Length: 341
Image 1 (cartoon, rainbow, N blue to C red):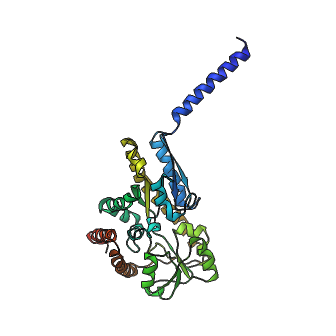
Image 2 (image 1 turned 90 degrees about the horizontal axis):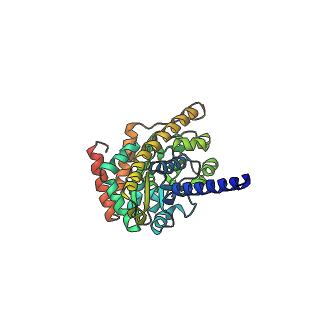
Image 3 (image 1 turned 135 degrees about the vertical axis):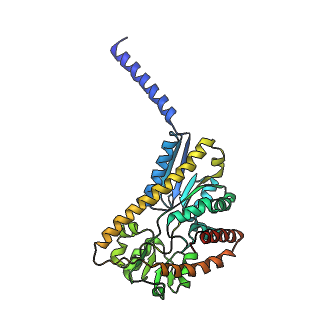
């Protein structure tokens, strides 16, 4: 055999081995999950790392592509898209589905309830929250893998808001639903605006304050430069992160992969909370170095006042559906049992 024929034969053998190796390494499951953040936000970055971790834990048998908000369907439609198999899963805020059942609003963001993400995670894992949410999404063809949470959202303000009374008449951006109604009851004048318009609205004086994500993201977006009185730590909003998958897919998975996905959510909880906590600390240090920015931290008494206002609205919402009542009863029992009310 000539050298050229030997070379050609060796190349062919190498190609065959490479093809077989690639086939052996190919994932058994390839999924697309959509998130509720834009690419580059801390939440999106951490959710991408979660997907990579699932790949490692599963030995390459699962490969998940993470997409930003609106990539396939609007953020309000991911529940239906997952159930229909258009998406295989999502990592999102359940509040977006409140038009389907008011329980989604309560479960997604029980305004004023939580001061720390692990309080919410504790309720989900030991207070009945997981079981209730799983029951809520199952009719949509969705399996709830587990819940995560982020740090309490900061509050952007162009005027000093040191007490609940200081909210009186303040024009502030708040999403529609429970958050909007609670701020109304607290005496503010809420305005519904998409997140993309908050900076411009603050800059032009259309609003004086805004409910908008965590401190680190607000600082990076320059919000605190135009609204110099941010409230931190947040006193109002601590959204749940719903990590769910198409139920038919879940039911068809071997038990070891189901266990891996469940364990991956537990790991994600800690990775996400502490990474955002670190980013917040760095952003707070940066803001404090700016003499034009004053960070306001509400006292325990003021937080309690706001929570009492919020509690009344929780009770009002409880009667809106069977599930909201069940959720309300469970969360109030959990909070009371831990002296958190």
